[in-house]
Length: 203
Image 1 (cartoon, rainbow, N blue to C red):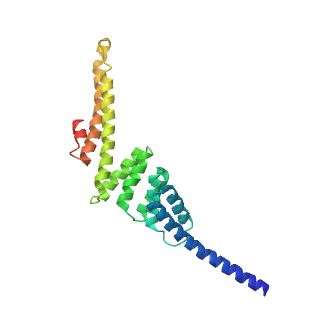
Image 2 (image 1 turned 135 degrees about the horizontal axis):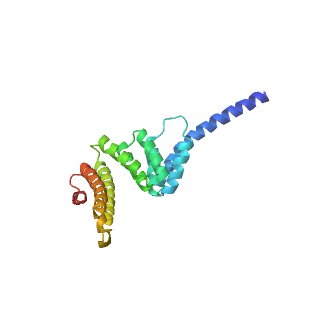
Image 3 (image 1 turned 135 degrees about the vertical axis):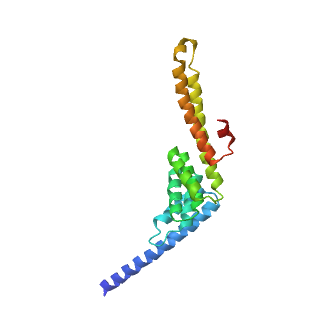
């Protein structure tokens, strides 16, 4: 009888633990939402991550994932922001906004090629989104920056011409022209995204 009573107690204990864990995940999520509303982003992220870790097999709360990403972004934890915005997009929650912030996370991490790919795909995929303008602006700014860098490099090359190296002027000019061509290519890419961009037109 003692054996059966012990088994019964253990069974009820583990069932109770499972229920408590489910409640705990929901409570942690709600506490995370309260912290987010209070702009306590660090605490909000910690609470959301604890909730995610104890969520179980139930379908993940996509809004919570997005809120975790937002909290991470607010405290400038770009790696976690990227992770959760990517997951939010996969879950189909605010996919256009998530795409923009995925690109933004890559930008802040200095991963510009990844940022460019995300923005190009996002601009095509979310052509009616209110975030389209934000995505275009980020991409155009990147192209104009690259164009300006190439233009400055070309000018620097041209400035190496002196009376002493007059016999090398043709070679110096040819080298500068190749760099100016790259500057033009980036400016044209910017204009493909935004045909009215004044900086790209000037270049």
